[in-house]
Length: 422
Image (cartoon, rainbow, N blue to C red):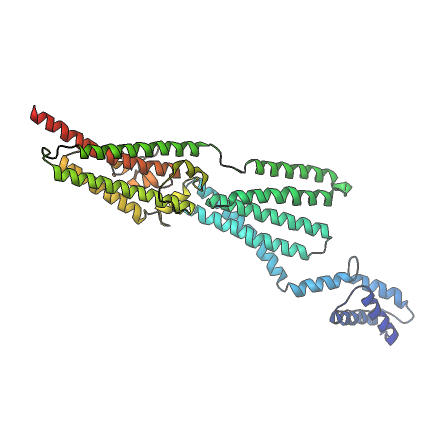
């Protein structure tokens, strides 16, 4: 067995230090391992330095400093392999939840929002951060690390913007713009200049860069910077006209009531009661609309300005459905109270004046025309998963029907009075 001298041991230790190993404990461990290998395999008379160089080369690929880098990585990331397994698991879970949530959303099944939220949150705050953390610790040049950072940041912004769009949360436009900006000004330039110098990958780099630029351009093209005059805007202007009709009927009903011949009217007390009930019911509906608008767009308005509603966060049916129905898809108390008051109003005019309600005042179940004849409650049929602008229109139409029912009673009373005189 070969015996190393003190000079040879000092030579090995000095060479370890010269090759960039700065951790004292690691220096001694390497020295111990190398000395053991040399003493067990080197024979008397063999070339010590040549055998040492061959031995030490077994500890690295490019240079000995890699051993310290890997040691630091393992010491810093004690659960390195657990993190890699977590990254793979979270990525798989995010993709599965996204695919399943998308299918649920297409089929209008409950649980779609939860699955999509789980997918986006897992992808954004678990998978992508772990991917960046692990990749940044792998030996590579700084350009590749910057490329990974830009790609991960773009992915996090894209997933977050998608989540905000799906959930109809405010701020989604700014997130989409940020995603496009990071992609076009950071990800694409870093990717292009990192890979273009490699002649073997030059063609692929150019093609991939063109695809990235095109995808970013399409994303930016679909980002709405200013609200456009789309169908929603037209619907809200139509709602404004419908509200004007309702106000006109309210004023005309009040005028008709004031011009009644109080001396000759046989049902003056019932007429007064009817007029008050109509006003109260219309006021209740109006307050519900105001509360809906304020809740959806974080406002504190006292009245509705229909022409400005399209500038808020009123797209789709999610905001209004979330306000009017609970997590179990059941009508909230405000909607149940409205139905109760509408039914009481219908019962009153039926009992006292023998007049049926019209239009939406009919709170009975409705049949799904395009389906299999399934019956839906009044709340579900008119307000559940119904676009916000249509919900507002339906509530305004309900106010109009209340006014029409009241004025029908006034007109029928006037006609009966005229017939009695003749």
